[in-house]
Amino acid sequence: MEAKFRNYIIKNNLLDNCKKLLLAVSGGPDSLVMLELFSKLKEDFDLEIAVAHLDHMLRKESAAEAKFVKNYTEKKGFDFFAKQVNLPALIKKNNSSIEAMAREIRLNFFKKIIKNYNYDLLALAHHRDDQAETVLLNLFRGSGLQGLSGIKAKTEVKGIKIIHPLLEFSKAEILSYCRKNNLKPRFDSSNNEDVYSRNIIRNKIFPLVEKKINKNAREVIARNSNLIAAENKFLQKIALKEYNNILNKEEKNTISVDFNKFIKLDQVLQRRIYRHIYKKLNNNLDDFYLEHIREIEKLIQDKKTGRGIDIAADIRVEISYSNLIFLKKENMEKENMDKIKYEPEKKLKIDQERILESKILDINDFSFTNDSLVAAFDYEKLNLPLFLRNRKPGDSFKPLGMSGHKKVKDILIDQKVPKPKRDDLLLVVDSNDNILWLVPYKISDTYKITKETDKVLILKLKYN
Image 1 (tube, helix red, strand yellow):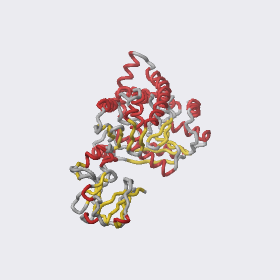
Image 2: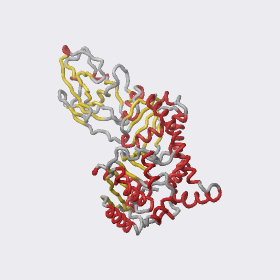
Image 3: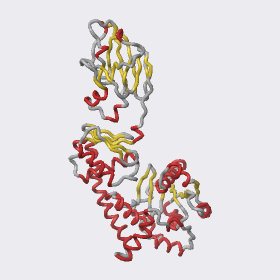
Image 4: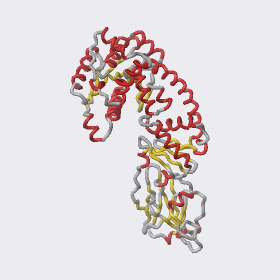
């Protein structure tokens, strides 16, 4: 088993450029065997090893398990990191599922250790049976080829580089190794409870399939996941090329692609692009299933600009003219800026990106410009002081050259301004809240420069 473990690591380049390795050890047979194997081979790979253990306080025996892992680790001479979290209380407070909350807490715990102590990789003890269970679980959830590829030997989640060095080992092999090497692992009693989806697959579905259909079902499914992973990798390469061809904008919380180009792609590639975008915005594919893809496809079939849907992980999908836009919720919940007073001929820093400048000129020194970030007004018509604010429901004014008022919302629609950007736009208003300038699209006809104008106020918006 030690030779097989070593060969798997070399074959998959799991420890390339790794000098400091963090092992997640619960005290169960899987993680204990992983710790034992690495301790025997650390000289071969020139590794500095440490162990991390998180006590979720879900079971009475959890404190004893933490103590067991600590003692075992210290006997090996490795550094040990531990944390105790009252998971039941957090679940109740946040109204979250046990699996989702536990996963989030674990990742944050590991990430903090890796960052503070400069570990290169995190090793998790998932094995071949876990792989088979994961594939079935993803199949039932409708997660496509990506999910059917199962657990990867090397991956990255939320900035954590993770390896799975036990994926070629069955649970039976692991338990056998424990017996032969006199290891005394702790067993999680909750694994026998058919409460979680994974436990039902492990305790109910696989025993029935192995008895009635194929006694080697777990091995076959795990082996097929490798074949699927290879084909998935090939298709993903094509999808990424198409994604780059249709990409309009990619920011931390917003991704926009060309709608007209996107709808010409084959559905297989479209669905891969959905997953790619979702992962970029959410850092993982958690909770993104076929039902969400079908919701997006229904939205696209309608082809109505301004329409949108909310999917998983607080991500919203919208059609905006020739754009298909994906937005993370934190980007959408930006509050309107407070009304800011502005004194002409002074420089005002609006935010980290925008600065407003102005000057007052005699009409003889003034000349018009086509720059949309510059606006000019008859100074003597203005009701000072001026203010800056975001738009409000019902805002309207008389745009230059028009005979009547028009809603700001309709102007922005005419200008094809994407819906997510509309609430970030600036309005310059007078002391009576009359709109002078919808930056950078329209100025008010009420304050325009005429033959009778003597003084001109020039406003200029600058970007850092």
